Image 1 (tube, rainbow, N blue to C red):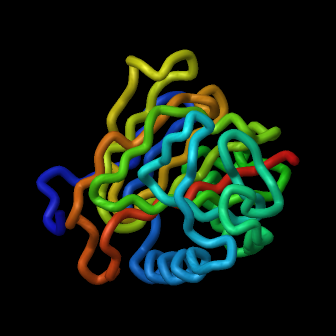
Image 2 (cartoon, rainbow, N blue to C red):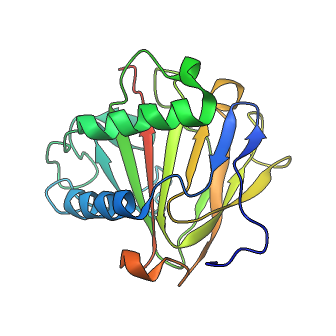
Length: 216
């Protein structure tokens, strides 16, 4: 991956959905990974998400600002240790607003601040089924940041979990933003590529940080 035959360029995957490769430089990736490791510590740390049907998600999760559980938000880790959710830092919100401006243009930056983060950790066997981010009361763009192993990110349509969809390779440092007509598009992670994280990062697995405006 260090020597690209075909350099990666930003791409509009769908209306309102943009992939920006290598958006985070090495220093920012290291800093974000360090923050994720602190957020993952208890209380209200990294936990396994259980679905209403009794299953479990293979990607583990920690939340900032508000705690997400299927399919609502709470102020405490109601399906974990019950502790108050960790605060959402202002610097992370500023990063989200800059991401939207870079990907979709300044007019797409929401008036309300970003106030929720869902941090998902994927080991080599973890997956994420097709779903929509529809539990927020605001329609601000979702900001997705990737650290560690590469993955196949499947970005679909607003009507169904099935085709049409587009598969995008997300690598460490990549940015993906979706809003406007794509805000409620189904998306998921059918595959992670173990061992593809940059050696200098010191991460085994993949971290995905998604930033949202709750509207709550």
